[in-house]
Amino acid sequence: MIMKKIILIFLLGFLIGSVTYGQAINKSKLDTLLKKAKQNHSEAVIIYKDNKLVTEKYFGIGQANNKIESMSCTKSIVGLAVACLLTDKLIDSLDIPVSNYFPEWRQGQKQFITIRHLVNMTSGLQNNSNASIEIYPSPDFVQLALTAELSGKPGEIWAYNNKSLNLMAGVIKKITGKRMDIYIGERLFRPLGITDFSWSLDSLGNPHVMSGCQIKPLDFVKIGLLLLNKGKFNNEVVIAEKYITDVTAPCKQYQGYGMLWWIDYEKTISIIDDEIINELTNADVSKDFIQKAIKMKGTYNSNDEYYAKIQIVFGDNPWEYINETLGSSLRLRKKEFSGKVTYRADGYLGNYIIVDPKNKIVAVRMISHQSFENENDNFVDFGKQVLNLTE
Image 1 (cartoon, rainbow, N blue to C red):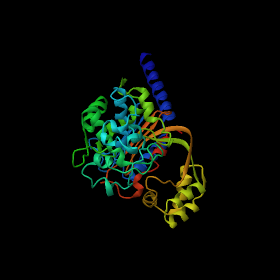
Image 2 (cartoon, rainbow, N blue to C red):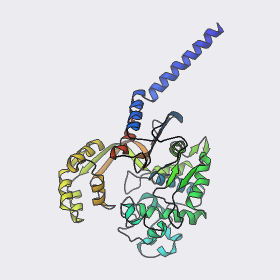
Image 3 (cartoon, rainbow, N blue to C red):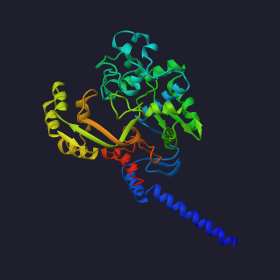
């Protein structure tokens, strides 16, 4: 009789666990995601649901103990480091002028640039979207940012800017007295149990901010788990919740970006109208590009719809042409957002952290230059597939 009860309890537990898993993650969709991850030469895919590991897969040269360059996802790590500064009261707010740390900026428009402007990508500093032209040849990334000209008024527009962000390495060192990567290792990584990582430095020893953190996939996913759990890890507070809110709050200049984290919405409407065409025309963009933009005119009710039209008008793999033409100050579309909100760290080659607060999912995908073969390996719909796992 006792044995029958034990068996019955075991079976009930198994059935309940199976039902819960079925409601949480659609196994067929998970299998599809993992199959595509392998086809796209991913090195690692790790997914958590409700703070429990769902899958940990390595492909090709990927191994659990291999560190992988996180590319621009490094920015999102730095965003959390800034939240640590706020938590520890090392800075009172994000609105402190950068000139407090670099007195040479106490003149002209640069005196108005704040830490918020750097981490929200609204500094107005001149930037070339191709980092290999200005940034990588420079021996001193911090000084390069300090001497950059202004291309716009600080705080006026959002523009993705690697050059200005690299200045945060200098700012964090001034605030903490420690090199940025050392500070992050001690203050952010150590509480997460991250001890084995490396960081790219410029010739003068400044850590890169725009990219440069090499980290193991199982440690990389902890960054997303920290965000999901509002600053807690293993029930210990690493970052105060109110500053996690700052990290994920959209900047007023662009709803799709917070403090070095991308903010995605359930629905994105893209609009290309006469205002966009006039902006491009007044900026002396090439006639070929403007003619293509005119063909794009209209309203697109999803990113898929917009990207499909992009490929019809601009051809396959058009992003280098588009990015080089638009630079950091022009746009091809206006966006309107609505619906469920998720967060994303996004790096070159298709390195991602996806955080879905509603379904309590964190997912990472990592790939290195060694595995990357063509544009398909960017796995651009990784985030979309992650968000569909529970449907």
